[in-house]
Length: 319
Length: 262
Image 1 (spheres, helix red, strand yellow):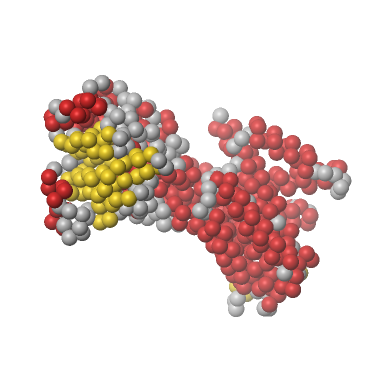
Image 2: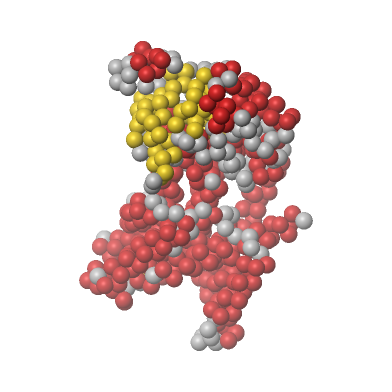
């Protein structure tokens, strides 16, 4: 009974948020519309790392590598062939999958801080490769490429507009959310949470913990790569800065701000972080060191809302 | 007991294995200079309740850790149903059919009682299913509920495990182990810290589940040991000091000297 009420509540909430995000291009001025699209993309990156941080108990500082490889994969497809959305997605996802398989295989042998450091080092290795392999990756300057057309191959296609791009991103992010949510509630997802709670015990009841962790890192990397593809589509460029570990750090910050282990929280965290940064820049000017006040806000959130914005809101609503 | 040594360590001893579930041959483990287990030749028959007793530091928990793959023995072999399982990781050993409960309660504290047992039941199948809700697997849910019922925790199914009383958590430990459908259940001080009434209930519980499986139990409570066990093995400084029925052990002068006298 309560389960049913809970699910009605969830789906109506989901429908309302989707409706608001769907109509937003009609309401918002172009700058804020673009901003919102970007929040959704960063939200997807944050959400992908929540699968590891919040559900498996592994903090990854390597998500910039997955994000970046999704981005450069899409760039490769768009530069080598006639620009095609399907190819961009396929190349981006394959790029992210290969890299995350590689990172997962080696890093999951380690735990806690050692895992975090290993993922960080791997992402920096990819950063250096991309930064220095100028002939292929464009090095420091990155790559510029055309945007493909939106459509289903052979059936229908039309050029992306800011509005249709926003909808496309919205559909991909919402779809990813529903898939990730289902994964966290699947038997596999329950094993991940069991690993987070008590790893030796999970092994003792018969689970090959390493294999589950590898799968978790790969899934997480795949969705991070998807976010990279979306970012490439929106901005029509790929740059090594996005493979740098600062991006991974931001993904972790989004998680902590929004509430880890909630999937929605990280999107909220991304939105809050980017909005604060934008507003601080507008109020105090472009050259304002926005990270200083943002840092204080971040610390305040950790102290007063240790479960993040969503966790705090949830508790407040339940009162 | 004489049969055990004449059976020989060769793999050819097939007929002897029908009776014995678990056998160790020359099991030895050293930590640096310390020999925690020294040449332990142990055998337990199917359906038996065997207790292992001994003073602190005798190697009881180390023995369990070897059997369940947490520690790798320095030398010797562990045979389970005649199959060499020495050095397998804990998850493989669990799959073979050995389960254990822990001396220090080892559960998923922030999961419900039901989930603790359900995740253990799920370890046999469906663990790699990604796209269906976990409650959709009726076989696992039914198994989990049956196990909770058998350890008397059904009324607490939706309670978080960390909110259970100590005694209830101890029984949940046994429930988690049972849910993996073991042939051999190793219980590490199942009644530690329990009240007399709780101890009594847990003994009844162990007696009930012993009908279907083999039980190896480490216990300090002599009342529990003497009442439950068919046979007792006494460990002392990592070696088997004596082995026999509760009556034999209670009258064994060497056991009295090192252990029971106090």
